[in-house]
Length: 141
Image (cartoon, rainbow, N blue to C red; front, top):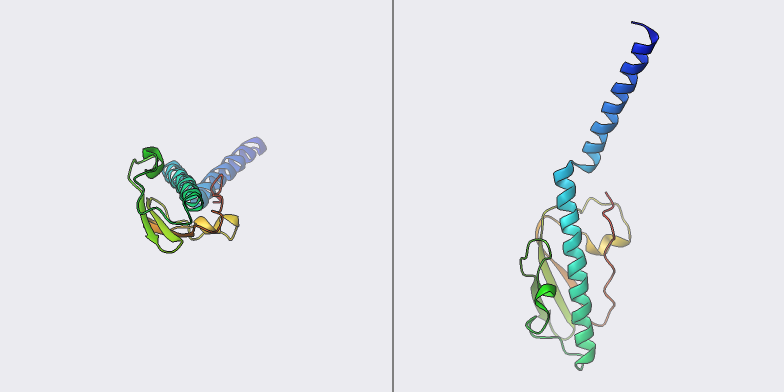
């Protein structure tokens, strides 16, 4: 083999290794679609929690009994259309639950820790007297 063929073979092997490592670390395109779906779900939950907190402040520091008086779009997962679950826990705490397609509990510690969730149905706890943390703008993995 001449030197050019060896160099071409080495470059090709390097590219294959890098691509394989990328799939191993990040997952394939299907996994990334699911991660983005979960991110949109978290962003929608964050928006709904902000609306609940605003209603709590505006209505004498009383949690709404249900989500009936909120816009339909705010009460549902923007991707799947599944309804979010709301569970008030007087006097000012509540839970919002949704179904997630991925488990992101292995993320490194970051500002997004508040929104880490397992795969499946999961509930986030909130206190209406505290600000709702902002969700991440992009996945950290």
